[in-house]
Image (cartoon, rainbow, N blue to C red):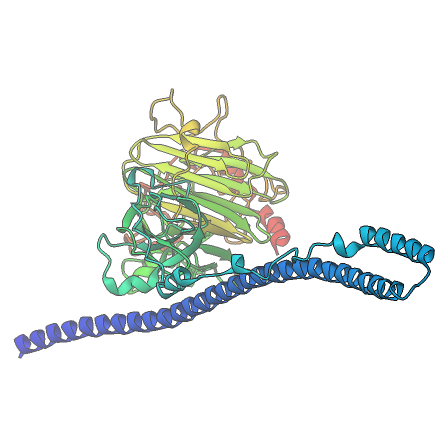
Length: 594
């Protein structure tokens, strides 16, 4: 029975694969039919336009030849008309003289006759009829306007569609992706008036099935032999390109497809790790506070025992999502892709009416879900704050270094090279380095983000910018030391009248108690346990998945935490005693936050 079911499952898988292949094939046919219709209409309109141009050319040439004939005829007609008028005048004068001569024969007087004869002789000598030419000045011959378009007619009979242009060849050495721009160059085709069509698409496979031909995007009408594709999110492993030449009536064959590796880091925010008060999309997170407790697993403490009424995380039957989800005052979410090996780059932009934002990297397995970024050896972060006053600080291992906050970055670029131990934070708009860590990473990292008020937008699918090499430190060897400034001890306690915008304690985003805002400081170390009144903003122990014991809840500290700095004993630390003494004053901050 089991063997038959397994065979049936294999058949189902095969049928599912075949059905998907047929769907892709039918979709490809639909795309081809649509393209065929559009291309037929396109070439038909071009043919009609070309025939119209040919007819227009013939009409223009015919009008020119007709005009030449008419002009020659009018010129000859004018000359003949002038000669005709001159002949008529000469004939009229000759007829009049002839009549006068005939009448002279009837004169009987000798003297009078001699006088008239002399006059007639003089008039004959001066008569125009004897000086005018009796031949036409021009002939009727118009043979020089004879035409013979037999050769042209033969040429018209040979009219046909233009041959397709040859195939251009992609120049592999000059096709690359740099600074998120795809540069493509190819050889020229030997055909006048040819343009080029560049097609590109994304792919995660080294071999793309033929059914994916409909996924190409086009750039048409390129007259140069190179092009640049910008504004493309590099969220795939490869970008595939191909090019073909076109003339007015035909398109040639495509060149061989070329795969260009993007080498871009693409990830999404992992909603399974997000704090319950964070609304997470693929590339954005927004802080949306709830009226009730921050974490449904964190209940009120038992009044008699002073311990949490919530069962141990290990003993409860909660899902994996709740074990990985950040809680308390750690409004954090992690990326879903690990960082190892070479360089990785992404950008973060605070959105909305944000108050505090942290961006960095962390060891996913070693970061406790109650610990904020930079509060343990398992995370490195850059914190931006606009609460009460502006501040920028770099944090790691519960230590902080204040940075220049006069130019608050609006877009932060993060570069992490796991192998070299480089972690850089940059102001992208001003192309300046904000802070850099140089360390030795012992585990794979994940991008990490903390939001309090407002939100963050994360842009992934980006290549490492070319200017990164100019910002990398070259003199300092890798070190795991925290980024503390010279002569700067661990930060001082937060006084009751200070808000979360200042940076006087180890982390302005921590919570010393259940009612304290994210701008306060729980003590010298989030891994220590100040007593039964400690709030959910602190670290419950080394791992939310471990068992703190039968009487311990998630709000207590079962022991040292590998993801945090154990620090000094709160019982012997005067600063910890100061925090206990000023515990009642936290109600002031509670009122401010409300």
